[in-house]
Image: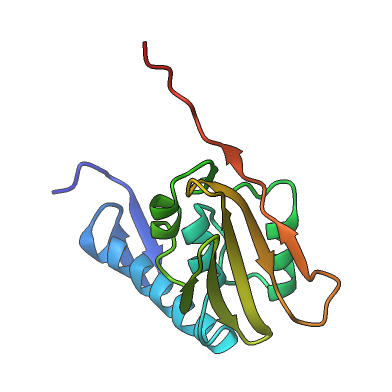
Amino acid sequence: MFPFSLLFRYAGREFWVGSPSFAGMFQFQKSLLRLLSRFRYPASLPEEVASDLGLFIPNTISFKDFMSFLRSNHCCPTTLKRGMDRFDAERVFSSPLKKEIFSSRTLLSYYFAKGWLVITLFFDEGGQLTRAQVQCPMPTEIEGFDLHLLEKECTLQL
């Protein structure tokens, strides 16, 4: 029936790897974990912010560790590039609770139990992304910092 001959036992039930019931079991666990994460993060999830930035961060991470990761040199958003068009940079963000657009910057706000996390995108006169800054007005040693943006890939046209 299935191309695999691997049998998996979980909670007294047998599942064939690749069967719909096997995939459904892990989908159920993922949904349950997401529901439990909502008690810790009632409005925005770290996973949602990370997804907008093109990163993977689990919802099980603490808020302080989440902020430390965003500040670290290892965090380099894959969806934002320095020199991106404004329309493309703003379109990347699908899950902020509030989006405020001004002439030279855009504020993207996410709400956590510890307070608001605001990502500010700065643009030059030509509408190109120059900088992305994270601000968190909670009483910690981490108040605001810039995200490490990659340079936009330039293609030469002859």
